[in-house]
Every structure is written in C-alpha cells, then in structure tokens.
Image 1 (cartoon, one colour):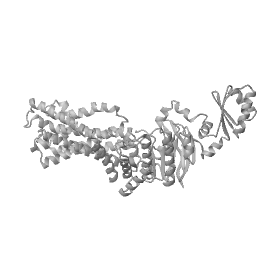
Image 2 (cartoon, helix red, strand yellow; image 1 turned 135 degrees about the vertical axis):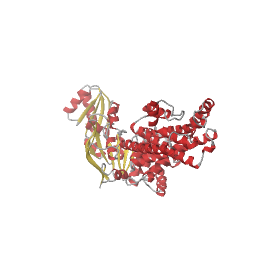
Image 3 (cartoon, helix red, strand yellow; image 1 turned 90 degrees about the vertical axis):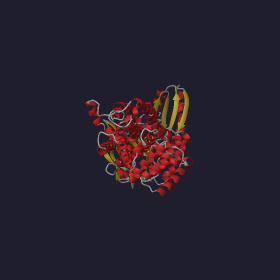
Image 4 (cartoon, helix red, strand yellow; image 1 turned 60 degrees about the vertical axis):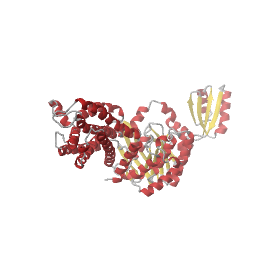
Length: 328
Length: 254
C-alpha cells in the first residue's frame, strides 16, 4: 500500500506557484526525503498533506484519506514536527505530551505508558517534569518528535528536523529517526536541505526545486547518475584546461567555479594523474587536486546548475515567507 | 461536542494560570490601587446625588467589572502568543473541530477571569468598599451570572481580535480606541443618567454598561435597568461574540 499518493498537487499564492503539480507515491514504511533549497516548496507540500493548507488544484491521499474531504481522518493518521517550534514553553515536557495525548483522545493509562516509553526513547525522562523553557534546542526537537509519535501515527512528517542544531545533536537525532521508523513501523517523510541528512536517512529522495520534482531515486542511484567520481582541481587557467580535457575526452562533465573546476570522470583515481600531466605539459599550474565520491550536493548542482546552500544567501526570503502557512 | 478536547484546552489555561504567580499578583494590584487610593480619595469629597450609597460603594462594582474586562481581553488576545510561538499549529493540526478549540479557550479564560473577579470582590469587602450585608445568596448568584457573561463576551472579543492579527503591534490601537472607551462609557466611575444625550446613546451601546449596571443592582440595589434585563442583554451579547469569534477563528489557516 502507498502511505501517500499525490496527483498533480498544486499550490499557488497570489499567482506565485509554490508547488507545481507534484505527482508522487510514498510507500508504506519508507523514510522518504524531500530535498531542496529554501523556497523550493517542501514545507508547502507538507502543509497541504497535513491539512493545514488547502491545495489550489490536484489531490492527495494520506493513508487512503483525501486531504480535503477527510481532514479529520488524515489528522488522526499523521504526526507532524513543524519547522518552527510548537511547544508550550510554560508547560513541562510531560505536560506537553499529555496535552497532545488528550487532544488525540488517548485514554489515561495508555497515555501515561506511552509518555514514559517515548520520553525514554529520546532520553528526556530525566527532564520530563521541567518546564520546556529550560530545554535546549536539541531537547525541544526531541520532545517534539516524541510528541509527534504519541498517538501512533501511520505517517510522520518531519519538516527540517535538524535545522539549527549542532552536528552532534543532529547525528543523534538521525539515530532516533531511524529507530522510530523501525520500532514504530511509521512511514516518515522528511524535508531537508542538508544533503548528508537525506543521504544518511532516506530510502528514496526527491530533489525538489521551484515547486517541481526534478529527480526521484535512492541516494545511491542519484549519485551513480553522475557517472563517476568528482575531481576538484584548482588551476591557473581552468578554461584552457577544460578545453584540453574535452579534446582528450578525459572528462564527462566539467564545471568551472572561479579558479576551481569540478570534473566528473569515471575511475577518478586513474584519470586524475592524467589530467595533472596534461596540465603540466601545457604550462597550466595545478595548485590543488582532490578526488571525492559524489555527494547528493553534487547531484543537486548537476541538475539545477547551482549549489543548494548558495541559494540560501540569495534574497529569496520574500518568496519563502509567502509560502509559510499564515494565519489568514 | 468533543468534551475531552474542550477539557484539555481548559486544563492548559488553568495550568498556565496557576503557574504564573506574577500574573495573579499583577491582576490584583491594579484593582487594589484603584480602590484603595482613587476610591478612598474620591470618597472623601464626592457623593452621588440621589442615591444612598457612598462613592466607594458606587465604584466597587465598576472595579470588579474593570478587572473582568482586562483579564478577559488579555486572555483572549493571548492566542496571538500561541500563534507566534507556534503552539497554535499543534492545536490546529489535531483531529479536533475549531469550535471545540474556541469553546475550550473561552471556558478556560472565563474561569481564570472569574477567579480574579472573586478575589477583587473579596478585596472590596475587606477594604470596606462594599458592605458585607450586600452579600446575599441571591446577590452572589446574580453577580456570578453577570460576571461570567461579561467574561465570556470579552474573552470572545479578544479571541476575535487575535484571529485577525498576527502580532501584538496593533493591540495598542485596539486598547486606546476600543477597550478604554468601552471601559469609561460603562459607568464604572460616574452615574450615567445625567450625562449629555450623545454620550447616553454611546453608553447604551456599550455592552459593559449592562455588566456594571447589573452588578451595582445586585450588590447595592442601585441600577438604571432591572438586573434581569441587564443579564438578558449580556447573554445576547455573549452569544453574538461567541459566534463572531468562532467564525473568525475557523477562517484562520486551513
């Protein structure tokens, strides 16, 4: 069975298309990643699937329930951890969990057991009775994830679950997420703009840009698509070397970024010495040369023509603000 | 009706209220200052023509209503904080109808405002601003009904405002142009039967006026209208405000 089915799902805000006719099936039990820069439409997609925003056109089913016609059934089947915190700081961790359990109509006994069990799972049992305002960012995030699992949802949405957390906490959260997926048998859809995160966690990844799915596959397949290793070379004259490489057919693809160039080549460890030799023969100075296995970041750059982080610096904020569900 | 969900929201309001001692003290300090300084001060040189009671007795019901008005509106408007801190999303995404959310919020906030008002009433009795003899089972019952209705009205009013605003920036305007006039036109400080005609019209349009009038009628037997008439008007206004706030709240986000 498919946990989620989207058919031509579209959301427009005053003529700006945030999500552009996405059709996608997410299978039961998988960890699925929506990967893309800020403003790509990831959060808007999740907002529609979780019934917070109504789609402009198209349809989607979550656990077999229509997101427009059967909002209540959808809400009962899903758990969600929003990008921005959504805890009551004045209440304790346990009280936040309890509030959630009551809203989802879980009886007292089950609630108590479930709270203890989940708080243990995220290592918060010692802090359960402290007010949330005393928690660190990582603790809040863990509490939110535990809370999202409180009512045993079939599908869990995690919107940028590790945004703004330090690397150690992030790593630990990844382990929790994998654990949940296995132990709770919950289908997880997460959005992220961290490549490592998608790579580590997700069975399948959809690369999203400007509201569209550009590529969908397992992280391994996506990386293989590039067809080789990546050689990052800094030289005195990248344009000249690029021409020479093409003539000698040593590279499948060359990208020039300033004085550095990214060369995609099959069997990089053999190709790299040849490239250096070629450069020396032609009087081009080689400053650095590094070979790496392709990451999802490289895949992203390959398909969109720009880096995922590069985009963050652009003044795209206004578009992003528009895409956030606002109270109107 | 989703009683569990309503109870859950009520419970949250109570927990938050009981946890913030400064809020309880803050809510009581203003009425205390008004009664103990302004009330006692004015009492020495003012008398209300045509009634038996002294000024302090005249003003005390007004101070109780003032406390109700402010705690209720603030409590309703606090939904803006829930919006800003994101907690509202947690509530909105739950399988609970918007109506239940509104009812839970109104009941929780009304309970808090009533507790405050009863504390102010006790304070007025202790300070001698209201004679202990004014407290009979009937006057207390009538007062509770009136206070509850005033509170429900203005919590809903605050909630309606909160549903249409995304931050507290506009709130100062609403305080100056809506809440303060509502308060001053309610007759909390001066009798309304001798005011100019234009003001008389406004006071009759002010729902809070019927709260002050009813409470004064219940406690010191001085009122423009029969107490039951005041209760009727307040009940109608509460019902209207509940409808308005439910409508505005459910229109918000999805």
